[in-house]
Image (cartoon, rainbow, N blue to C red; front, side, top):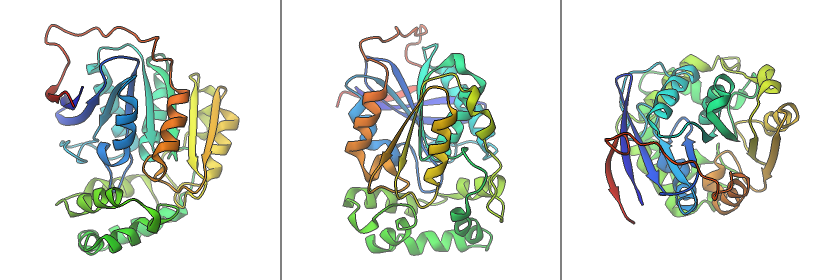
Length: 303
């Protein structure tokens, strides 16, 4: 089974993709910018659905989610906490890419009893400076520049590849469906406005970030997988390498010929790594549904 659902959390309409009917629950958290649950996790959702119950959420003002939130890691942690409270499981495995990794990490540090395992992919929150992100922040400061840049970037598949060149290892080698997904996001009215606010709140002009969990990593008490693209031009590989040395129970996987968008640049290799690490699907908790059944589901199909 696959489908979509909606959960109402603190006045926000949080949309999510849902797949799989058996196995341990896995919650996927997408990143910032031109992203949502489908863009980052499309292949992972399909790969995991046979053995796991998969939930991939859209943060407020991303994808199909709406609502007024403070666009910070702490703000998204509150959204994630509310979403997990709607699920019929005491513990879940969290996986987050980039900003979503920082959110998943922050939640896990505060709620280790609710998390079975944590997968951090090219993750934010593991260092104090992101100098490569400054170009995005500078552009956002000019009135109209963000929307104009979106229009220009989405003009053709070639222009989309030029934008992605600052995020991936080899933009020319990206499959056409990935480029089409990003182009569609760029063409959506109002897209990346949440990202602009996130940059204003989280990134300073000297490259320093507002969220850095490095000093807390030794207290992280759940099994953790760190995955990083070898050629990631945005988040330094050294962040994940250092984190793997500090987290008590950590595995590190470096994906070759891969930049920042690992689940889409190298989906087969990424999915293999993630599935090998995830809990044994034969040992799944029984969901404790309410009388109303699966919370928030508005549409589902048997494809």
